[in-house]
Image (cartoon, rainbow over all chains, first blue to last red; front, side, top):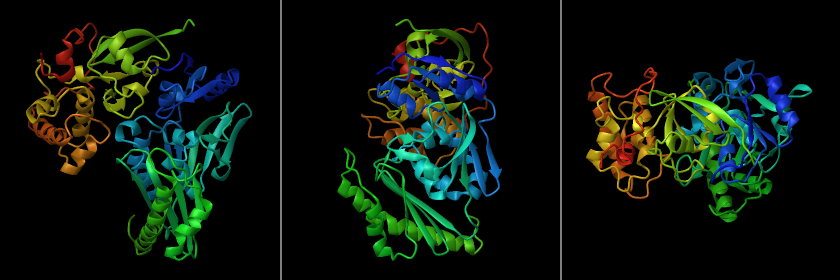
Length: 279
Length: 194
């Protein structure tokens, strides 16, 4: 189908973008559009205006920052995936991005847009949640930083306000002796995951994040838990959802199979790094 | 409702084009309806099938997930732009013909553009990499075996090609150059002629 009509503005500054959003409560931000445009085409969303931020300078950079890496709102997934800096500073981001859609979609879709879209089936929200990053936004009252713990409140719902533009995300780096792993199961590489697990192991601390299982990207602390008990503990915090692609029971089964496996891989990664490996 | 119209300048297959479209005009529709380039096919219209894939500034993207108005000043390569300068089949088109990489041909334009960019980025793909190049495109006829074979064959042809013989999307556009949209749809779609 075709989108419903909307007004279009292409501001050259953040201030103009914020003003355009503030002027129209039905307006939405357009960055890569790879999640938004399908919604428009299917008429699941019908914003009255799109504020295209692609002409705003300074939003398309990946920069090293103390303790991590900052990704601008216009950086495409493909650029993040190809970035040696990202791979070195936070290998989990690289691992997860390889599972984000197909290369053609990654050429246009943005990592920050994926974070703001707040899809619990997306890889980026749960990765940021697991790593404890943050999102920088600019609104009528100026800039503010939203810690990821306060970012996600419901299915496709974040705490970014209607008149705010997300400008960058901060992704913390991986500690020297820590390890990470990521695995998801999809019917076809690049499709939506039926379920996915990310894990970070740092010394005795073990944490796992789950995507496409519950309505929200969910992180569970598995420190000190034996491998055979991990899935039960994780499932106590998860509420597997059934849909046309997988039943709730099947998703729970995927959690049982993948959780200990991903944690073991992350532990092995930590061991390799501790022994002076490069990844 | 009266919709505002926007002036958009695109460089399509090396030719400057100007169009006046509502903001909601998808690039796929702008190419087909406004510019008459019906080689680009529209399948699912939500980014899943890959039939509408075109190259924007050389990179493959879904034309159904982009609004034409957002691409003012950018360069677009469609399947019509994949033939050689003399009008004969480009490497990927030739490989599809040799390997029987198509049956009904509906998905073919999206495969041709995707593979053109894929083998430019990776001129000598392994079998696995060849599969990965086309992983985002759906075909309901072939079972993919011949398409993957065509990826490998296309890479082979392109490697043997005389440099400069392969159409490059970054070729400088020339004002007043004759458009290519007046080819027949059959040729435009598959490059195989009628």
